[in-house]
Image (cartoon, rainbow, N blue to C red; front, top):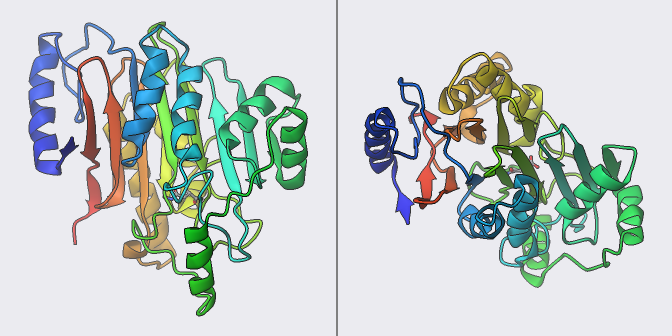
Length: 332
Ligand code: SD4
């Protein structure tokens, strides 16, 4: 089910009314009333592939499983899908024709793990989790990450599918790096979950911007940029042009804004306004980029905001399983 912005506002207003009765999911724009009950479990994730990913996460959440296990299982769905051309197996390559993956994971205890520029391993998120749980470090890069993955039993696989190879060969004819907002499908899955026990976790995984320079790292594997979780406050994750997300330490900022009292959508909006401000200061054209945030607070309220139309996110609770268009800044 896809919900457009108009329906989203309608639903949000209805939700705002129902929160007062203590009976609703608190969708979208926050209520002014105090929430009586926390919505849990709940899972949200970026883009349309989030719908299927949420279902996998839900399998765990509905059995009172940990949010950490849920987000890992959830994002593994697009990672394994060759038709999802922006994450894991089937992801688009860099300009040298090499698929390199970035991923990170964070739990309710402040444990973190991340891999950057990982090659030939499909489930980058599980390698990130292994970094978190089995090493004294929080981030492994490139060859070191790959060698570590092999020691943990991950199998070497060719991640470059025929369609991606063809697109890359086509791209080489002009070799112009001009990522177009929402168009090149350079999407990332970021997922946030609150489990029945009231604990939050998040995961983020991507093949990054198509035709990036070899060695380029985006926001997605950087804790604080592509993902942040504070189990006392809430969690946030980002998608879009990673350079702009890193510039404002995006996901950490969203969580800090929630700590200061902003509802999830307000916090996401304020972070997007920071992106806008720094784009304007640098005299860059906002139309050339997309940045979207999603956020989930400790009460199970969620929200989203992005630079321009086109970004959507998936929500799953006991009563809702839907895709929503995120509200956006750029109206023309
Ligand atoms: C990156 N943020 O590598 C990722 C890409 C993405 O929608 O999310 N695109 O910069």
